[in-house]
Amino acid sequence: MRADYGKLLYLLQDSQFKEIQDLLQFDMVTKVKTVFVLLERYGALDMLKDSAMVWATKEIIPESKSRHEIAQEIKQKERAIEYLAKRYAKGDKLTPDAIKTCLYSIGDNHSFLRTSRDNIDKLIVFLKTYFRPDQAEEEYSLAIQSGVGGARLSHNHARQYAYVLQSLSLWREIAHDMFKLWILAEEDLLEGSGYSLRDTGQGLNRVQQAPKISREMQTILYRTQKKLGDWVGSSVVHLGDHNVPNAFIFIDKYTQVPRILNPIVSTISKIDDLVKDPNLLLYVNKAFGGKEALKKEILCDFFRHAFDGSGADNFFDAGSCIDGRLTSAWNWCSKVEKKRYFPAFLLTDFIGFDGKF
Image (cartoon, helix red, strand yellow):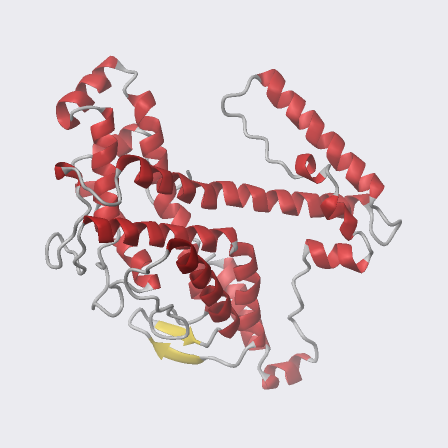
């Protein structure tokens, strides 16, 4: 993302300047080829409605399955792929290999959603399972006070519960539409107006408006607001300013969400297995009062201080705006090593928030 891909995007962006076009005498930018466009071109869109698509693009997840069950699912998937590749091929124009590439591409999206969107769903379930929206347990109140513990917002328990639920729900919708947003981001970068090079406080950045991403984000935000009702905090989406200079930085920011949330979900999910060791059970009981208390302590701290408006140089850059919520979450990540429950992370295979999960 921040190495070869970022350099490639900026190189292509510069290639769109007229003086560069005149020197090159060809256009380096072309449209992204999608599954839909390819199938539409050769009249094979009916494949997307074929019942075999479910098996052909299904991700085989080995958890809680026997070897026989896994082998059976793999065979069924392979049969579905071969059937679709033969059924919808169009000679040399749309070969069986091209059909398979389309199926693998759709499968990649399913895999992305499982690792990115589905863990946000799990965290929402944790929020609803361990905390009530209208009443707080004395030790596990989500209430925050500006100036206390680094918080820049003041919310009672009910308001903070709603604020966290809204933030997670919005991230979930962004993750669900990430492939669409990514294509729009490239269009904004490569087909939009030129950029200006400015010092945004984090070095020189290409500041460029991103109208397509902005419109889509407003649609996603409206959909989330309509689903959840009254909105807590600001609904400002920063784009084309010193907070989020361009569409590439926007994509980079929101692909970090799984890096933040996946280790937390993993730790909470592995605590039950952790305490199967009698010595670790004794530790968890003595230090935290039991495995459920440990889970609630981690979640309570995350839901409070990963959504408290902290992490930026001033209130406007973090606070309660859409991007500020992500800034606060990263700020919490930077301090997790100082938390008293941090050993539980290490005991459940935590590597870091930039590691492989």
